[in-house]
Length: 164
Length: 83
View 1 (cartoon, chains in turn red, brown):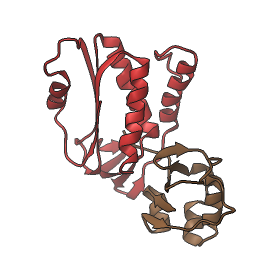
View 2 (cartoon, rainbow over the protein chains, first blue to last red; view 1 turned 90 degrees about the vertical axis):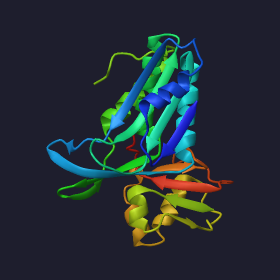
View 3 (cartoon, chains in turn yellow, orange; view 1 turned 45 degrees about the horizontal axis):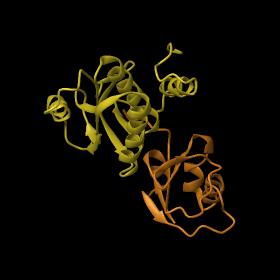
View 4 (tube, each protein chain N blue to C red; view 1 turned 90 degrees about the horizontal axis):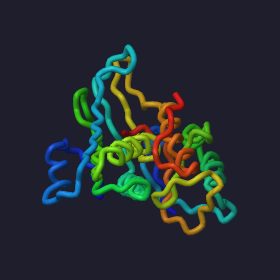
């Protein structure tokens, strides 16, 4: 697994190539890219600044990847999360999950994003027309992460029907 | 013991980290929050809604009843909004 927290942008193609180079066992690659939006509801956002807890951010994401590797037969995972000031259109986060088949790759990528949202120590502060403000945690994100807990306790690694 | 603060907890307290000697009677994360809240109005403001505050001991998420004995660093922060 590879976890990186960095200020710089990332190159999705290069990250996929690094995971698959010289391998012929990988049959499915799922990627998710989070991008900085220019609006939140009706309000325009000029930029956002991502603060993180150095050390814990890497460790916490690493723990989630380790859990994903227990749940699904993965063949390599990369997570890159940026910090610092980002403007609309900038990449924020990248998750790549690889497996022999598509289902584990899709599921692991979604699982990792759901946990990144609620457990990885990052905080967003937005620059809005009405002033700067810290983004509040969404209960829908907590519910998305919670689905996996209930699911795992039920003995099935796959995602159940969405609660919301 | 080293204390770390992030996001608006950091802004309200006015510093990102500090070294603090915690009294022996303070045994859990929740007790530490209560004790810190009595150190000044900036702490009281940061911890005014204790249920909102998240904590980590040595870079692992913990609940308010977690014991702090042996901890090297304890961090306090709002609910996370990354991704």
